[in-house]
Length: 257
Image 1 (cartoon, helix red, strand yellow):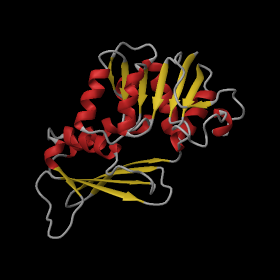
Image 2 (cartoon, rainbow, N blue to C red):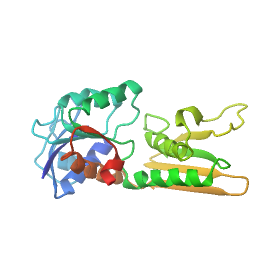
Image 3 (cartoon, helix red, strand yellow):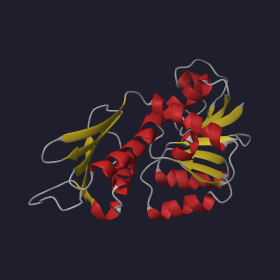
Image 4 (spheres, one colour):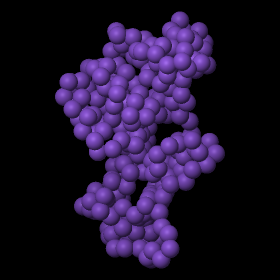
């Protein structure tokens, strides 16, 4: 049994994570944190996520005996929580270059699994996108279009950038040099450009489309998340991986392999 704590247990993803851990026979929900003074403080985590009474209460700090932390919060909070010094699975997105340096530093002491998307399907799709991009070749224009619920803070999504980088990688391009974020005014397409567009509205869990256009055809690769549970299940799979991993910075690719 892997004793696991959920950081940010009262959020939309936090509740899904609590339920996924409670339902996994190899995992034990050791605890879950909420913000100081939050109305959920002291609440039973099982009841909070709709699983039923678990006997584990929401606290401001995670229990010291938790082996693994899982966190889908904000970049600033995630970086602050690295001080816990625990094996950690991070689904937070929107990190800056400076944040990444701190994550790399923490990974020298503990296993850190970082992924912009915990979905197994998305991470398999990355390989497909890279291969399709390589085989279709430069005569096909690439556009990445993502959609999420209206409450999502960062845009474009970490997953859109993840898949855009895969498409660029398939052609031996530097994504940061060829990415074009949206279009406005007179903006003809540049050679080798990869367009990236973000849509926000309603309760969309997550949709990503990578479209390859030529003069004669259109090839589209699509992933749609139908429930946040798909991300929670991937995170639990990742938690089992880091529980026995050596210190280092890992991706979902490492987990799946």
